[in-house]
Length: 128
Image (tube, rainbow, N blue to C red; front, side):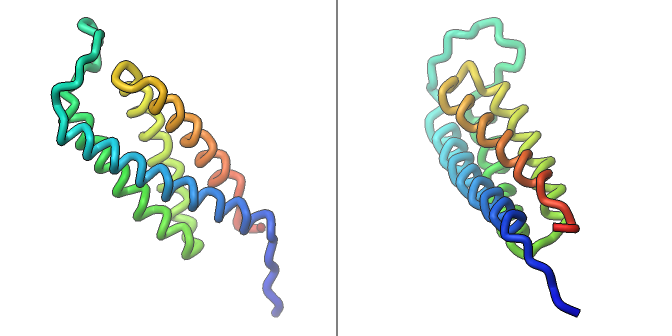
């Protein structure tokens, strides 16, 4: 029995893997910055989701580590890894939405990449 190989599916998977790896590294650096430097001045005194930047740093660091692990798992072709990748991208999207008052530009950028990851991972099907 011959195996089929769809170059589009392989390209989308590679795209999603590269994005996850890049986002993981960015999240790790954001987390380290938040943990190391807790004296960030933010003009949002009534922000309902206000946490210390150290707490946000730990959130981003953990998300980043999970992103890198999932990116490595996706290379193996695991369906479970794609599902986890979509889930972690959704969590990252939510976390970065809540992170908007702290660093709006980077939060918007990561949100845009999270949407691309969700699209790329949901685009690939087993039949491809």
